[in-house]
Image 1 (cartoon, rainbow, N blue to C red):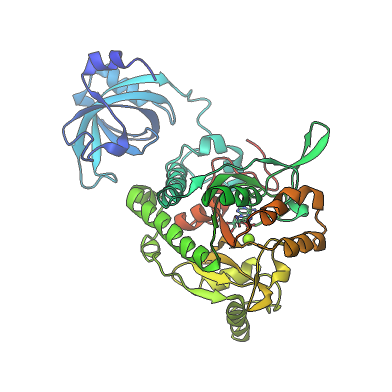
Image 2 (image 1 turned 90 degrees about the vertical axis):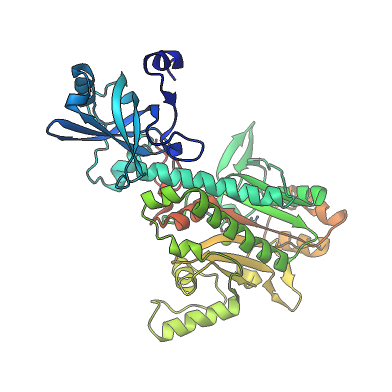
Length: 455
Ligand code: 4AD
Ligand code: MG
């Protein structure tokens, strides 16, 4: 940032950000302020210029009547091109018609870098194709809609941690470089580790089962990696997952935590990011209903819903009982409710080796998926974990997993094993749902997908 004293001496204005204008602690109507930002867009109408500035916190429209400023200031504003960096001084004016409620009577602009007119900012205000935008993601993130999504993402992550922190969970970070698979070997990214093969983690779960038995209630929060060759609007190869894990807990505790957790996150976004939801045009009525209790249906009940839907011609394909739900199945099930639905007790055969069987019928696992409404599908997957040493060992063998690599994990069942449970929530899936986005590629600053690793 340039030296504050220079601007200060010239203008005697208070340096601030757009987002706080009009808030109790921020500058009010009539205040003289300085903004450090960029030109987003400009309109000219006779002897009036209407530059729109952005500063990372929001956008504000400036007004420059030719008669009110010196010729130098007029020429400087008029010369501004899209995304030129500029320090602006002016007077805040309340205006009910303005999107943020305020406009800026510009008094001075101090141009930091003028984007040359002959090589303009590549992302103009007209429509661009998604491929072009993804190729210019490093610049695309500057546009108001993308910036709003990233602020909402940050709020989702903040609120998620806040919920767990205030419930007595301790954050314990698992390694990213791992010697073995967690969710199945086909989806691992191998890395060369001093002459041995290691993998990027798919989930911190196995490690936080260890820390849960050490600390009681824990969570991990970090990037996870999946090499599955999925080319859907829900799959990234690198995504962020937050995973709580609880000792002395079972499936019911997990479902209760999940609905409180997700409600807190959505309500926090509504409260703290209302302006950004407006920028992206989200229907907030659909988010206001996200409060506990969430509907709970068993796998069997969900399968029945799909059968009935097929009979009525509401879904294209007949659901094969016993399979896991595919994306179209999840889309249909979740679209039947106005809030997330928890589907529990899937057939053990289609789920991970570490899931505790249901004592009522061991063909089913004590597991749950939470499916977001409006067709967004799975946002959470979790389960109670196998507590018995013998059963876990036989499961590892049956899944052809390397027993050696799992000795430490089996230790958790050798020494003071207890019922314990946890889930993982994918941040990008939640951002997509909360923002009402078509595709997860816009939910993370730099998406990694099957066919993109640039920029
Ligand atoms: O259902 P998943 O695979 O569960 C696990 O990894 C467990 N070990 C978690 C646990 O019990 N601690 O993944 C959990 C969540 C999914 O519900 C989804 O939200 C997200 O992670 N997710 C993905 N998000 C984006 N792209 C992908 N390829 C994803 N795969 C999973
Ligand atoms: Mg899952």
